[in-house]
Length: 124
Image 1: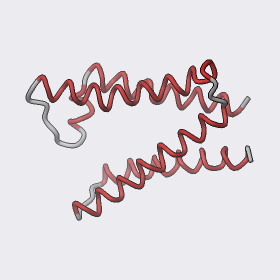
Image 2 (image 1 turned 180 degrees about the vertical axis):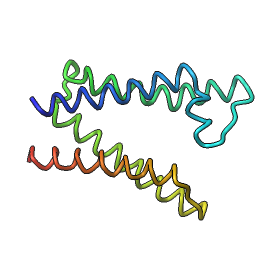
Image 3 (image 1 turned 30 degrees about the vertical axis):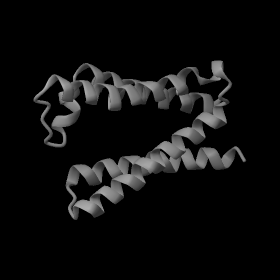
Image 4 (image 1 turned 180 degrees about the horizontal axis):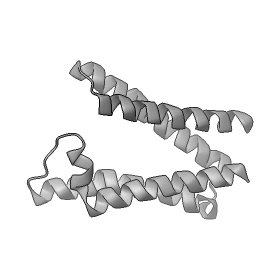
């Protein structure tokens, strides 16, 4: 039951982030000082980031209807957050700089990854 609850929490998290990014991509990009001066740039952010997050939300919320077990969906979240952390660290290293907001997001992602890791480990 706890795994199912975590899948719902993950699904709602991605649903909220994806919906906000899709509806108002400037909310997302303004956090990083990015502008969206053209319709093409807004479409790209809506599709790639908003659409990606919404797609993940559907897997977490409805994946059981398509043969994805609770454990598989938790592992998917684990891999997703591990990848985001890894590539965030890589991007910080490439840029040679960091900010409080980047470190805050990294900390949040590490906490989520840790919780998901504990869940995945319990299911072995």
